Amino acid sequence: MIPEPRANHITRPYRGLSVQEVAVPLTEPAISALLTGREVYRRTEFLVLRNGSDAALVAVRARERESLFSPVAELRVLSTPDTTVWVDDPSVDVGNATALAAAAAAHRADGALAYVVRGRFEHVNVIWRPAPVRLRVAEVVPPEPPKLFAMAQQAIAFDEDLPPIELVLDAVDIRELADARRAAHYLLPCRGSGVELPGAVSFLDTRPAERADWLLIGCERSRQFHRHFYGDEPATVDLCPRARAVGDDLLLTKCCLRERGIEVAGNVAVVPWGSTMDEVRAALRRLCGVAEAAFAEPAR
Image (cartoon, rainbow, N blue to C red; front, side):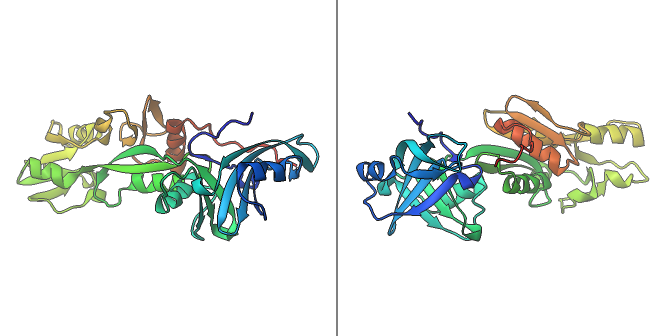
Protein backbone atom coordinates (compact mmCIF):
# COMPACT_ATOMS: atom_id res chain seq x y z
CA MET A 1 0.00 0.00 0.00
CA ILE A 2 1.25 3.47 -0.83
CA PRO A 3 1.96 5.23 2.49
CA GLU A 4 0.58 8.65 3.35
CA PRO A 5 3.24 11.34 2.91
CA ARG A 6 4.83 12.84 5.98
CA ALA A 7 3.89 16.36 7.02
CA ASN A 8 5.69 19.01 4.93
CA HIS A 9 6.22 16.63 2.01
CA ILE A 10 6.71 18.31 -1.35
CA THR A 11 7.53 16.73 -4.70
CA ARG A 12 11.30 16.83 -5.32
CA PRO A 13 11.92 17.50 -8.13
CA TYR A 14 8.48 18.78 -8.95
CA ARG A 15 8.41 17.07 -12.34
CA GLY A 16 7.25 14.10 -10.23
CA LEU A 17 3.87 15.85 -10.02
CA SER A 18 1.51 15.86 -12.99
CA VAL A 19 -1.57 18.09 -13.29
CA GLN A 20 -4.40 16.72 -15.41
CA GLU A 21 -7.82 18.06 -16.32
CA VAL A 22 -10.51 15.38 -16.05
CA ALA A 23 -14.24 15.15 -16.67
CA VAL A 24 -15.13 12.75 -13.85
CA PRO A 25 -16.31 13.58 -10.31
CA LEU A 26 -13.35 13.82 -7.95
CA THR A 27 -14.53 11.04 -5.66
CA GLU A 28 -12.43 8.05 -4.65
CA PRO A 29 -14.46 5.51 -6.71
CA ALA A 30 -14.43 7.69 -9.83
CA ILE A 31 -10.73 8.48 -9.50
CA SER A 32 -9.84 4.81 -8.98
CA ALA A 33 -11.85 3.79 -12.03
CA LEU A 34 -10.20 6.50 -14.13
CA LEU A 35 -6.60 5.83 -13.16
CA THR A 36 -6.33 2.08 -12.60
CA GLY A 37 -4.26 0.74 -15.48
CA ARG A 38 -3.85 4.19 -17.04
CA GLU A 39 -0.38 5.05 -18.31
CA VAL A 40 1.73 7.58 -16.43
CA TYR A 41 5.19 8.97 -17.08
CA ARG A 42 7.85 6.91 -15.31
CA ARG A 43 8.86 9.77 -12.97
CA THR A 44 5.30 10.61 -11.90
CA GLU A 45 4.62 10.00 -8.22
CA PHE A 46 1.63 12.28 -7.70
CA LEU A 47 -1.27 13.45 -9.82
CA VAL A 48 -3.33 16.57 -9.24
CA LEU A 49 -6.67 16.06 -10.94
CA ARG A 50 -8.77 19.12 -11.75
CA ASN A 51 -12.41 19.32 -12.66
CA GLY A 52 -13.37 22.96 -12.97
CA SER A 53 -12.36 24.66 -9.73
CA ASP A 54 -12.14 21.36 -7.84
CA ALA A 55 -8.86 19.54 -7.28
CA ALA A 56 -7.76 16.23 -5.80
CA LEU A 57 -4.35 14.77 -4.98
CA VAL A 58 -3.50 11.16 -5.83
CA ALA A 59 -0.32 9.18 -5.15
CA VAL A 60 0.48 6.62 -7.85
CA ARG A 61 2.93 3.77 -8.35
CA ALA A 62 3.78 2.79 -11.90
CA ARG A 63 4.12 -0.89 -12.72
CA GLU A 64 7.78 -0.30 -13.59
CA ARG A 65 10.08 2.68 -14.02
CA GLU A 66 12.24 1.63 -16.96
CA SER A 67 9.83 2.30 -19.81
CA LEU A 68 9.01 5.92 -20.60
CA PHE A 69 5.35 5.29 -19.72
CA SER A 70 3.91 2.52 -17.60
CA PRO A 71 0.42 1.60 -16.34
CA VAL A 72 -0.64 2.59 -12.83
CA ALA A 73 -0.24 -0.49 -10.65
CA GLU A 74 -1.40 1.12 -7.40
CA LEU A 75 -2.93 4.40 -6.33
CA ARG A 76 -4.05 6.18 -3.20
CA VAL A 77 -6.42 9.12 -3.15
CA LEU A 78 -4.82 11.44 -0.62
CA SER A 79 -7.21 14.36 -0.75
CA THR A 80 -10.47 15.19 -2.46
CA PRO A 81 -11.84 18.70 -3.18
CA ASP A 82 -12.96 19.25 0.42
CA THR A 83 -9.38 18.84 1.68
CA THR A 84 -7.43 20.23 -1.31
CA VAL A 85 -6.67 23.93 -1.80
CA TRP A 86 -5.52 25.29 -5.15
CA VAL A 87 -3.40 28.47 -4.93
CA ASP A 88 -2.39 30.74 -7.81
CA ASP A 89 0.56 32.96 -6.88
CA PRO A 90 3.13 33.76 -9.59
CA SER A 91 5.63 35.00 -6.97
CA VAL A 92 6.12 31.57 -5.36
CA ASP A 93 9.16 29.39 -6.07
CA VAL A 94 7.37 26.04 -6.06
CA GLY A 95 10.63 24.12 -5.66
CA ASN A 96 11.11 25.66 -2.22
CA ALA A 97 9.29 24.17 0.77
CA THR A 98 9.36 27.36 2.85
CA ALA A 99 7.85 29.34 -0.03
CA LEU A 100 5.14 26.69 -0.47
CA ALA A 101 4.36 26.71 3.25
CA ALA A 102 4.07 30.50 3.22
CA ALA A 103 1.63 30.32 0.31
CA ALA A 104 -0.36 27.67 2.18
CA ALA A 105 -0.46 29.83 5.32
CA ALA A 106 -1.75 32.77 3.29
CA HIS A 107 -4.61 30.60 1.96
CA ARG A 108 -5.19 28.45 5.02
CA ALA A 109 -8.46 26.53 5.05
CA ASP A 110 -9.84 24.49 7.95
CA GLY A 111 -9.45 20.78 7.32
CA ALA A 112 -7.18 21.19 4.30
CA LEU A 113 -4.50 18.53 3.84
CA ALA A 114 -2.95 19.40 0.49
CA TYR A 115 -2.09 22.84 -0.87
CA VAL A 116 -1.40 22.83 -4.60
CA VAL A 117 0.46 25.96 -5.70
CA ARG A 118 0.87 27.25 -9.24
CA GLY A 119 3.74 29.71 -8.98
CA ARG A 120 6.65 31.05 -10.99
CA PHE A 121 6.83 30.07 -14.65
CA GLU A 122 3.37 28.44 -14.31
CA HIS A 123 5.02 25.51 -12.52
CA VAL A 124 3.01 23.54 -9.96
CA ASN A 125 3.90 21.73 -6.76
CA VAL A 126 2.09 20.54 -3.65
CA ILE A 127 2.81 20.65 0.07
CA TRP A 128 1.16 18.07 2.31
CA ARG A 129 0.03 19.04 5.83
CA PRO A 130 2.35 22.08 6.08
CA ALA A 131 3.88 22.46 9.53
CA PRO A 132 7.00 24.67 9.30
CA VAL A 133 9.95 23.89 11.55
CA ARG A 134 10.48 26.64 14.13
CA LEU A 135 14.11 27.79 14.21
CA ARG A 136 15.43 30.62 16.39
CA VAL A 137 18.27 32.83 15.18
CA ALA A 138 20.11 34.46 18.09
CA GLU A 139 21.89 37.56 16.84
CA VAL A 140 23.01 41.02 17.96
CA VAL A 141 21.11 44.15 16.89
CA PRO A 142 21.69 46.70 15.50
CA PRO A 143 22.15 46.48 12.55
CA GLU A 144 18.60 45.65 11.58
CA PRO A 145 17.89 43.26 10.10
CA PRO A 146 20.88 41.48 11.65
CA LYS A 147 23.29 39.86 9.22
CA LEU A 148 22.95 36.23 10.36
CA PHE A 149 19.16 36.39 10.21
CA ALA A 150 19.30 37.84 6.68
CA MET A 151 21.81 35.17 5.59
CA ALA A 152 19.57 32.42 6.99
CA GLN A 153 16.66 33.84 4.99
CA GLN A 154 18.80 33.80 1.84
CA ALA A 155 19.96 30.23 2.40
CA ILE A 156 16.42 29.00 2.99
CA ALA A 157 15.22 30.79 -0.14
CA PHE A 158 17.61 28.92 -2.47
CA ASP A 159 18.14 25.54 -0.76
CA GLU A 160 15.41 23.28 -2.15
CA ASP A 161 16.26 20.35 0.14
CA LEU A 162 15.38 22.08 3.40
CA PRO A 163 11.98 21.56 5.02
CA PRO A 164 9.72 24.58 5.45
CA ILE A 165 11.28 26.74 8.15
CA GLU A 166 9.83 29.50 10.32
CA LEU A 167 12.71 31.76 11.33
CA VAL A 168 12.26 33.56 14.65
CA LEU A 169 14.68 36.34 15.59
CA ASP A 170 16.00 36.15 19.16
CA ALA A 171 17.64 39.57 19.32
CA VAL A 172 20.43 40.58 21.68
CA ASP A 173 19.77 44.32 21.63
CA ILE A 174 22.75 46.52 22.50
CA ARG A 175 20.39 49.39 23.38
CA GLU A 176 18.55 47.27 25.93
CA LEU A 177 21.83 46.11 27.47
CA ALA A 178 22.99 49.72 27.79
CA ASP A 179 19.68 50.84 29.30
CA ALA A 180 19.94 48.09 31.90
CA ARG A 181 23.51 49.12 32.84
CA ARG A 182 23.90 52.88 32.59
CA ALA A 183 27.41 54.27 32.13
CA ALA A 184 29.02 57.57 31.16
CA HIS A 185 31.12 55.87 28.48
CA TYR A 186 30.51 52.68 26.49
CA LEU A 187 32.99 50.60 24.51
CA LEU A 188 31.47 48.56 21.67
CA PRO A 189 33.31 45.85 19.70
CA CYS A 190 33.18 47.53 16.29
CA ARG A 191 31.75 50.34 14.24
CA GLY A 192 29.37 47.86 12.63
CA SER A 193 27.44 48.00 15.90
CA GLY A 194 27.18 51.80 15.69
CA VAL A 195 24.20 52.97 17.71
CA GLU A 196 23.18 55.89 19.87
CA LEU A 197 23.52 55.07 23.57
CA PRO A 198 22.89 57.17 26.70
CA GLY A 199 26.60 57.99 27.04
CA ALA A 200 29.79 58.49 25.04
CA VAL A 201 30.64 55.63 22.66
CA SER A 202 34.05 54.30 21.55
CA PHE A 203 34.81 51.33 19.33
CA LEU A 204 37.32 48.65 20.22
CA ASP A 205 38.22 47.93 16.58
CA THR A 206 39.59 51.49 16.26
CA ARG A 207 41.96 50.83 19.21
CA PRO A 208 41.39 54.13 21.04
CA ALA A 209 44.71 55.71 21.98
CA GLU A 210 43.73 56.28 25.61
CA ARG A 211 42.20 53.76 27.98
CA ALA A 212 39.02 55.40 29.30
CA ASP A 213 36.73 54.56 32.20
CA TRP A 214 34.26 52.74 29.99
CA LEU A 215 31.83 49.85 30.12
CA LEU A 216 32.52 47.21 27.50
CA ILE A 217 29.43 45.72 25.87
CA GLY A 218 31.12 42.77 24.23
CA CYS A 219 32.15 39.14 24.49
CA GLU A 220 35.15 37.00 25.42
CA ARG A 221 36.98 37.89 22.20
CA SER A 222 36.41 41.58 22.95
CA ARG A 223 37.88 41.09 26.42
CA GLN A 224 40.90 39.35 24.88
CA PHE A 225 41.46 42.33 22.57
CA HIS A 226 41.08 44.73 25.50
CA ARG A 227 43.65 42.85 27.57
CA HIS A 228 46.07 42.93 24.64
CA PHE A 229 45.52 46.65 23.95
CA TYR A 230 45.38 47.97 27.53
CA GLY A 231 46.66 45.20 29.79
CA ASP A 232 43.60 44.97 32.02
CA GLU A 233 40.09 43.58 32.33
CA PRO A 234 37.28 46.09 31.70
CA ALA A 235 33.88 46.17 33.35
CA THR A 236 31.76 44.17 30.91
CA VAL A 237 28.21 43.39 29.89
CA ASP A 238 28.30 40.19 27.84
CA LEU A 239 26.42 40.20 24.55
CA CYS A 240 27.44 36.82 23.11
CA PRO A 241 24.32 35.43 21.37
CA ARG A 242 25.57 31.91 22.05
CA ALA A 243 24.35 32.37 25.63
CA ARG A 244 20.80 32.15 24.23
CA ALA A 245 21.29 28.39 23.73
CA VAL A 246 18.52 27.36 26.13
CA GLY A 247 15.28 25.50 25.54
CA ASP A 248 14.27 22.89 23.00
CA ASP A 249 13.97 25.07 19.89
CA LEU A 250 16.42 24.61 17.07
CA LEU A 251 18.90 27.48 17.39
CA LEU A 252 21.28 29.07 14.90
CA THR A 253 23.76 31.50 16.39
CA LYS A 254 27.33 32.73 16.06
CA CYS A 255 30.44 33.16 18.16
CA CYS A 256 33.64 35.20 17.73
CA LEU A 257 35.71 32.39 19.22
CA ARG A 258 34.88 30.17 16.22
CA GLU A 259 36.97 31.40 13.32
CA ARG A 260 35.96 28.94 10.56
CA GLY A 261 33.57 26.04 10.09
CA ILE A 262 30.46 25.19 12.06
CA GLU A 263 29.81 23.53 15.41
CA VAL A 264 26.64 21.54 16.01
CA ALA A 265 25.63 20.07 19.36
CA GLY A 266 22.10 18.77 19.74
CA ASN A 267 19.65 21.47 18.73
CA VAL A 268 22.25 24.27 18.50
CA ALA A 269 24.42 25.24 15.53
CA VAL A 270 27.16 27.85 15.87
CA VAL A 271 28.80 29.64 12.95
CA PRO A 272 31.69 32.13 12.97
CA TRP A 273 30.96 35.83 13.47
CA GLY A 274 32.09 36.47 9.89
CA SER A 275 30.39 33.37 8.51
CA THR A 276 30.04 32.54 4.83
CA MET A 277 26.79 31.62 3.13
CA ASP A 278 28.07 28.05 2.79
CA GLU A 279 28.61 27.84 6.55
CA VAL A 280 25.13 29.19 7.30
CA ARG A 281 23.56 26.80 4.80
CA ALA A 282 25.50 23.83 6.23
CA ALA A 283 24.38 24.76 9.75
CA LEU A 284 20.72 24.92 8.69
CA ARG A 285 21.03 21.55 6.97
CA ARG A 286 22.58 19.93 10.03
CA LEU A 287 19.90 21.35 12.34
CA CYS A 288 17.14 20.06 10.05
CA GLY A 289 18.72 16.64 9.48
CA VAL A 290 19.37 17.23 5.78
CA ALA A 291 22.44 15.63 4.20
CA GLU A 292 25.15 17.77 2.66
CA ALA A 293 24.36 18.88 -0.87
CA ALA A 294 25.48 16.46 -3.56
CA PHE A 295 24.84 16.26 -7.26
CA ALA A 296 23.33 12.95 -8.32
CA GLU A 297 23.78 11.39 -11.72
CA PRO A 298 21.11 12.80 -14.02
CA ALA A 299 18.09 10.53 -14.41
CA ARG A 300 17.03 9.54 -17.88
